[in-house]
Amino acid sequence: MTDFADARRAMVDCQVRPSDVTRYPIIEAMLWAPRELFVPRSRREIAYAETEIPLAPGRALMTARVFAKMLEAAGIGRGDLVLDVAPGTGYSTAVLARLAEAVVAVEPDAQMAATAQGLLDQLEVMNAAAAVGDATAGDPAHGPYDAILINGGVETLPQALIDQLKDGGRLVAVFMNGAAGQCRMITRAGNALSERYVFDATAPVLAGFERKAAFAF
Figure 1 (spheres, rainbow, N blue to C red):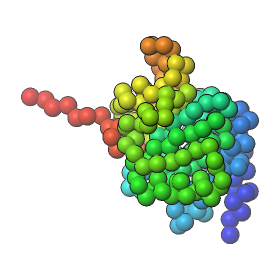
Figure 2: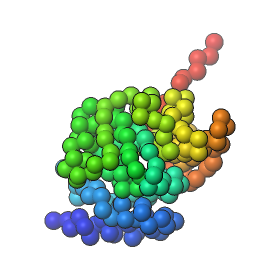
Figure 3: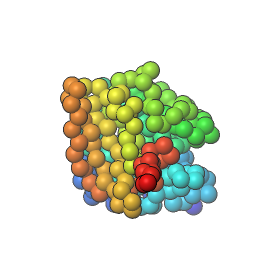
Figure 4: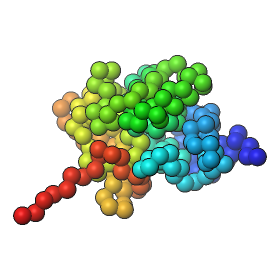
């Protein structure tokens, strides 16, 4: 039987720390979060492996390395309000809740949204909530947000999510172009947006975030 506490420490020591993730709150949060609870029971033995873990068709839990480096780029602080887009079963939401003041999670799959909220309740995470909703629309009612994190690949970024960034807010996502991808961060300064490359990464493209096909005549 896997010792999940040991596996969690090994994940942090072998996947997270060597990937230039240096902020202690991220390390602490990932050492705390029981990742094995957020994956299908049949895949718990590989919960801490250096691989994406399928959650549902077209959905996967990102590798610890990619997720941790996205958190490092976002620079989330204790006073931040965070929008967690398409968190699946809620692992990202639980980790973010250890870093931020509050987390709003929007998950398009009703069953996974219910699982996420159930696990947050089980872990007594009081400053985060997961609800079913359109990932491309975000949750403007509770925004604007200091940080927005998208748990999956995007080919196009909905304007609705950009509009929910506070002044100084950061949006971090994996932008896919075919089989290749890059994690990029978009930052708002007043009405201006800036974008910077963070690192190479890949993730399954989320439904609704695909590039629309162009028709030739």
